[in-house]
Image (cartoon, rainbow, N blue to C red; front, side):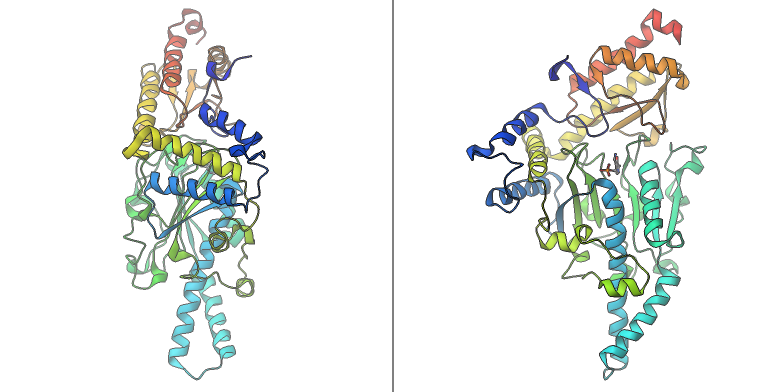
Amino acid sequence: MPSRSEVTYFSPGPAALPTEVVEAAAQALVNYKSTGIGLAEHSHRSALANDVLHVTKTRFRTLLDIPDDYEVLFMQGGGSGEFSAVVYNLVGVWVERRRRRLEREITTKNPEAAKDDVDAKVLEHLQGLVRSELKVDYIVTGSWSLKASQEAARLIGSEHVNVAVDARKAGDGKFIEIPDEETWQLTPSKKDGGTGAAYVYYCDNETVDGVEFPSSPKCLEQKNGGGDVGEEEDDERIVVADMSSNMLSRQVDVRKYSVIFAAAQKNVGCTGLTLVIVRKSLLPPATAAPSADLMRRLGLPVAPVILDYGVIAKNNSLYNTLSIFDVWVAGEVMGLLLASHGDKKVSGAEEVATAKANLLYDALEKHPDVYQIVPSKRVRSRMNLCFRVAHGDPDVEKQWLAGAEERGLLGLKGHRSVGGIRISNYNPIPLEGAQKLALYIEDFVSNEHKATAL
Ligand code: PMP
């Protein structure tokens, strides 16, 4: 049985954690800060738990330079929970902003109108708007954004979901490309004679397919929280990004987004925690969630309370029992990043991640006859490196994986839906681990015996 130090674990998630964090976590589970009680046993409402929340939130804000007009939420339900939460919350914002505007317009025209009459008129108008204008845009560049778009269609109906891009069309049925922005069929904004989408959604790094946006999409950029697409607040372009598998691996200009989320179990911590960054203008008191009654009358889904961003924000992420242990692990990982990279913060982690990815891609590229990198070069991921060995010959790939395992290089099997090999190069993978793997990539080719098998 190997020890921790003898293996490098390239799993896509749950993924390797820094050993010092795991060791400290083992101690914290038994007796946290000499209280005689483990961290998973302490009340989530204790002062000690509050301190954990505060420390993790502060470190997260520092690492990513999260502006004050953004809230950080600790949620549960993972990335998939956010596929649903995004729909509930942002369709709610779309409804509420239009409800407010209609109410204003109707009462301005007729200040004497009774509240019931105003409400009835607002409802009638809104029902028409939902039918004629409600659209959510999805940029589908891989398996996870596809799933997110399917969840949106399940919740609000496919007639409201505009798949602005399906990258498979540019990739011969596979997710290997990000089509040029000029080809994206976004719902036209008011400025362009349309009505605009309730939000635009994309996945920054597609974990299964190894496709990563080289930088944030230019055509979605907004200045300081909207207002650039039209004059009214409800013309604002709301951009959502799933950063589950590249969070904390590169600098992000949070201001370009309305919502960013990440399941923690890859680059941030362990399973059970989901990080959400949301612009405060989308939350109460700036934007209240529409009433459940109104949503029902509009035929739209009502958010389960634990997925309601406003409720989670109001309760400092403690509406219900949150795993403080998971929040603490994330905080420790963030603390280590701050300690290792100092003022560079997350761009320090970015430099290391890019160096490791380059090392590995270089090793693969030297032998194109043996290794075939799946995504096109422009969009290949620094976090999940997907490739085939011997054009996907199952026996050779099995042999490759077995040889890697013999050297303590684990977790390299590609996702079951696409096969092949996937190297997940998250922050805790040490440079020496990447070097060992690069060496194996070379050795596999030069090994006479194995080469003849190719
Ligand atoms: N988004 C991305 C990019 C992912 O990689 C994953 C999970 N691997 C998810 C969403 C779904 O996350 P979860 O399993 O936590 O629901």
